[in-house]
Amino acid sequence: MGKRNRRLQEPGEGPEQSTAASFEGHRENGRDHLGGQAAGSGQRRTAGSLPSTLLAMCSVAIALASLGVSVRGCLNSQQALELSSRDFSGARSLVYKGTLNESNDELRFAPADQSLQLQKAEIYVPPQLEADSRLLAPPDFSMALTVLRYELETVLDKRFPKRPGFAQVVDKASVPLIVDSMYLAKGEPLREKSMYELMYIAVISDQPYKRPTVTFKGISFLQRLPIGQEPSELLKSLWDQAPPS
Image 1 (cartoon, helix red, strand yellow):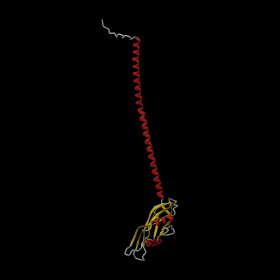
Image 2 (cartoon, helix red, strand yellow):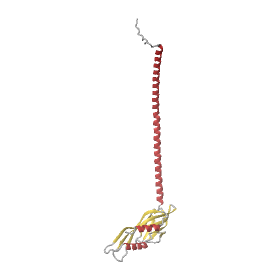
Image 3 (cartoon, helix red, strand yellow):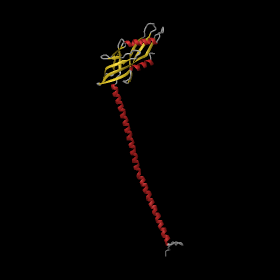
Image 4 (cartoon, one colour):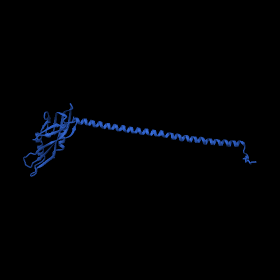
């Protein structure tokens, strides 16, 4: 006969205790099983949330890129508008070129831009040289320089005493002018006030009774002025601050 091994019941151990131990074992196994399922479910939820996060980040990046493109487009549009406005104003602005006659006693004014049509202009010089303004009128729009030359020679004769044996040369000298102009730009009447300089060279002789000689060289544009600017006061101040030297 085969021999059977049989677990002997420990003293004090009853059927109820054995059943309770079995129940506890099943409950612990159930907890482990549920815990494993919960952990697995948490891992699936974490893994599933990654694509949503990446999608949100991509959306933010695209929005920022779109904003940058929009801002750049606005800046480019603003720059284009400023350039267009500058070109429009430049095409309507008047700048003169001056032409001297052979005897150097008359200066003719003409717009550098031939599309602009000069109507008339008034020229102001420092009141220390000439008290009254000059009118530029058709057809030649010219300014006589005889009186201005005489006044300049007088000023230079007083400013530079004779030096026996030496002739003094004043170069890089100029007289400020203000020109108040009426003209047409593409059929539209406009008014503009600008400052120029009339450049000249002077020679002061050492001979006692010989007056200085003045040779005019031409005009140069300096700046535009407000229409309300009073010409004589400004020119007087400029001439006092920078006399011939």
